[in-house]
Image (tube, rainbow, N blue to C red; front, side):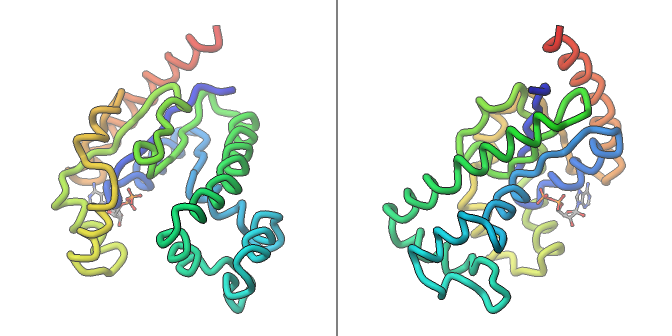
Length: 202
Ligand code: ADP
């Protein structure tokens, strides 16, 4: 398995923006959110199992998973949440391992928004946190998603705190400045990760 750097950060901290910076340097990106959507795409066994358990109302008119409805079910029932996790986690895990095994770059960047919340730190060789203060997170999330400050605040409140994330960090990118301010930090970390990855393979 390639050396794995987990990239995390709160909503609106700049994970996608920073991941693009690493991708531009030739690093393979594995996106946990993309995988989580992939395993329940139309035609997958997991989607069929979900529909078998909860009925056709779990499907949109287009035949895709009606996520809001599923969220509501698991929000109301820890037992159903357990059932869903038992179904999806092994699939997500297997797909993640498969993508890691296929990676061509000296190390991979595994983008995991809920790394800390789901206690997945141990699955990475190194944890990189994108850090901005909460006011900046709220402002950028509002602008990107066109939501109210209250909505952004609610999403933040449901995530790990800035402090919790920083405590798990091996490395930190400060993304509170202009986008171009982060690029030298990305370049420097890239060199460090290349060196660490070379050590691991030795
Ligand atoms: P995340 O993936 O962590 O939710 P994004 O990378 O989507 O965050 O960034 C959130 C928003 O903030 C996006 O609209 C992005 O273009 C913008 N953004 C990211 N970094 C900066 C920055 N340094 N300065 C200003 N805006 C930024």
